Image (cartoon, rainbow, N blue to C red):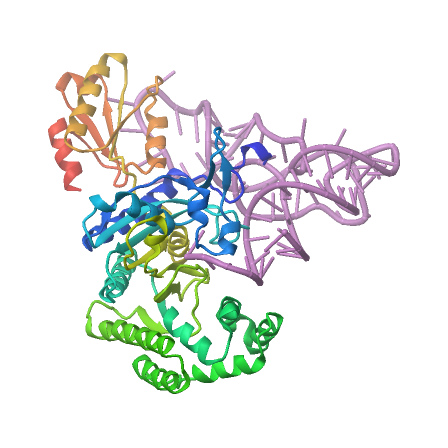
Length: 449
RNA sequence: GUGGAUGUAGCUCAGCUGGUAGAGCCCCGGAUUGUGACUCCGGUGGUCGCAGGUUCAAAACCUGUCAUCCACCCCA
């Protein structure tokens, strides 16, 4: 295919049949968000570059699409919804009722190399609550996540949680310098991928000793068989023993309390159906620079595509944009990945959707045209989607093929005979049966089906 | 940004050690002028991703480039 008729790298065209699934997924997410009391907002696709790049971390900053407008303003396309939310909240703070629960579904942009499940233009669906420091927010968001994923039919997945406050505590207890924290966390996050030796190597490259790694791992070496609540208790005892700095110790304990509350809530709530299980993972880090408390990621166990939803607490981020400091926490669903997982799990799903058009109407000569137009309008007023033939050939054979190919179930013919009796020949293309009925009767038959 | 694989018709792919392209499906027309899924007949469609180079001759070999996929990096 020549370059000019290909969509730009990392972007895609969607066929009508693909759009049915995409719309369904997004509508389901929208409904679930609304059922949990979130209200929809919108904000610009581009913002000032400086605003987007604030506190997002250098890796992400490289991925921002930057451009200048004609007045030389430096702008960037949003790469997620959290910093735009900070700006939005600061701008509209006085008009918003707090805690502010909002959702947004829209396109975001990242200049990065493409791969399966990784695009340069993609949809995210974001639910956030600004204005509360309570761990109830995390519980509500995770409950919302499970509810939504069940409705979407996501199969088996796993929710992994950790807490930045705990990580900070362990880092400190392991004797890792504050300035090297980020490098250490990044390496530790990769443990499952690169193994112990790999992490130690990265530690050394960043001037962190192997003994620091060993003590970090000793601290989180928890009985794999025990329940998460017991792991957290054990971790708490160790941190209390090892941490000398009171404020760091308090923070870490706070983090442990928060996770205990989240896990305790999960065990009490009966909304969890078992396919989605919350698991504590002390090695979960998450890249974005603004997280301050609990963090979480959701991964499919059926399809290897990375995490398809993630989020966490980012207290006081809104302060960066000039609002009063507020607690805030949010979750983001990767719509493309969710769709990829659904289609991977059910490869024929696109074929299973029936056409939104219920009846295809043709007339056989110009004499019946007005009657056909009136009939079409009649159906439409009844809420039945109709496609009226635009062909001037009036060839029944061709038209049936067309309607059948488009998956339209009913085919209505209006010819001389029908017009004379003010009726139509209604044919069910699946059962191949046809009958002569009035428009009224036809509408009833279609609605009944 | 780094490394690897791939790129031939709308789709899935074949094309040998270089001799200027083929199948199946799809699409279109007809057999069948008020009735589609099967069948039969016929037909459209490709500067072989793009640009250079080597050669009498390149889809094939070389270089560059673009895109897709995979692995890093990072992430939804």
